[in-house]
Image (cartoon, rainbow, N blue to C red; front, side):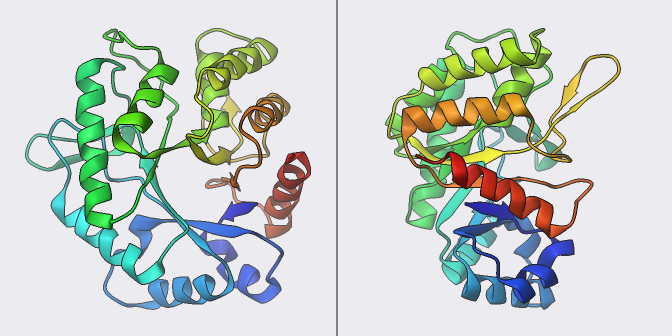
Length: 271
C-alpha cells in the first residue's frame, strides 16, 4: 500500500519510516534542475519505491504532446527509476501551447481512442517502458461518445500495451453526478469494474470526495475515503486480485497518521 507524499509530510515520513510499499509524487513538482525538491525526492527514493504520477501531459490533447514536458519527465524517470509512471486520460493543451492546467474530459469514440493510443505510445517509446493511464472524474461531456468508457479503456490497453490506473473514487463521483445516490453509485461503479478486462489494471487510487449543497460531487481528495468507495474497492480486488493501491489526499491535508490509517485499511482488504 502507498500514500501520496506531499510537502507537509516530507519530514514526518522520512523521520518515522512507516511500513509502506511505495510513495507517490506528482512528477511535475520535480522537473527543475537540482534544488531541494530533487534532493528530498532522492532521500525518499532511498527509503521507498516511488511512483511518478503526472498531471500535465494531456494525453488526449489534439494539439499533441509538449516535447519539453516529455523530455523533463524522461529525465526524471531515468533519475528515479520509479515503479510506475502514470498520467490521465484527458486533454489539457490547445492551440500553440496553451495549457488549461486541468484534467479536461475527452469523448469516448474511435477518433479520440486513436489519438490517445498514439500519444501513449509516444510517451512509452520515449521512456522505454509501459505507463499507466487513469480514468478521470468529469463534470461535463461532449455528447459524442460511441464507446462505453470501460470498452474505451479495454481497447486502449490492448492497442498501446499500457495499463489502467483505476481510480475507484472517480467512478463513484461520476455516478453520483449522473444522479445516483451513494448506494446506486457504488453499484454503477461495480458494473464499470466488471467490464474491465482482468490483467489490465496496474494500480488503484482511492480518495475522498465532497458533496456540495446543490448536489454536485467534487473529486477534491480532501477527506477520508467514503464507505461506498471502499465497497467498490473490495469488489475490484475480488475481480483483479491483489493490486498496488494508493491513498490520494491533496487538499486539507491531515496528520500523516490519518493517511497511514487509510493505507492500513486498504491493506486489510487485499486478498
